[in-house]
Image 1 (cartoon, rainbow, N blue to C red):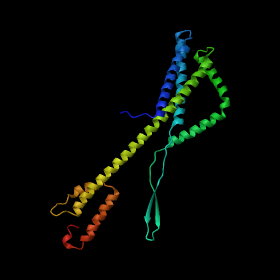
Image 2: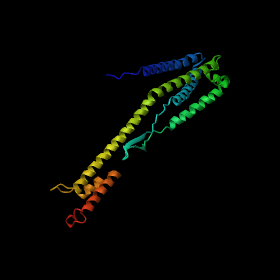
Image 3: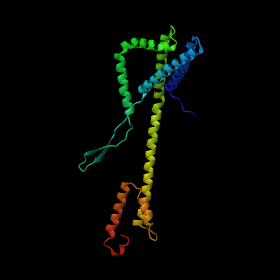
Image 4: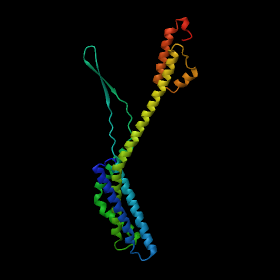
Amino acid sequence: MQPKTHPDAAQSERAMSVLAGSLAVGCLVIPLYAAQASNLGQFVSVVGVALAVACSALLIGGLLGFLFGIPRTLQQEGNLVVQQNGKDGNAIKDQRQETTYAVNTNLEQISDWLTKILVGVGLTQISTLPVALRAYADYVGPELGNYPNSGVFSIALLLFFLINGFLISYLWTRLHLAGALRQADASSRLAAVETKLDIIDIDAKAWSLVQRLLKPEPGSSPPPQKEIDDAIAPTSSNMKQQIYYAASQVISENWRNLENKPKM
């Protein structure tokens, strides 16, 4: 059975399909506009300039959409609260700060800062937008054939691909980036768990060999010293301490007895 798609996600995917289709339509409009050229060289020149402007606007819009669509990471720092009953019957609360490692959120912070800066600057400079668009049309229009409609087409080309790139990038970031980040975090946690299990297995093997040496069963031969050394070397520091205390206990129990000197 195929997993069911969330209705909102399905609508967003359809919206991306519609935007991709409109992007293709916008690319088809470019050669139609350039068809009014008088010769092939001018046609190729107009198409090349128009595609360069369209791709630049698409990339800028895509970058802005990515910055606006970066998901936030929800981080929780929990406290481990342990309640114990004291001798007087009152509950004693022992709060221990749980040590956690969170993902690096520098990109999210940069995205947040740039988003606020862009919105702030855009709101303060919105009155100068018509003048800037007119200057842009005067600059790009001659490179688009210098036709009577070159200025209008240059502005339409810029706004169409800029907005289209913004929406496509924003939707893609919202739909796929969060899932990719969650999958990467899950893989990291899984790798950490596997490493922890490997350490537990190494510690258990070393502890078993040490127990065979310190508390051998009747008639059994102790493991070779090299095997014990090789088993203890990769263990955790806690296990090394546990082995040390176990060996110290055997020494303290047998050092006075001359018969058990070899065992000590």
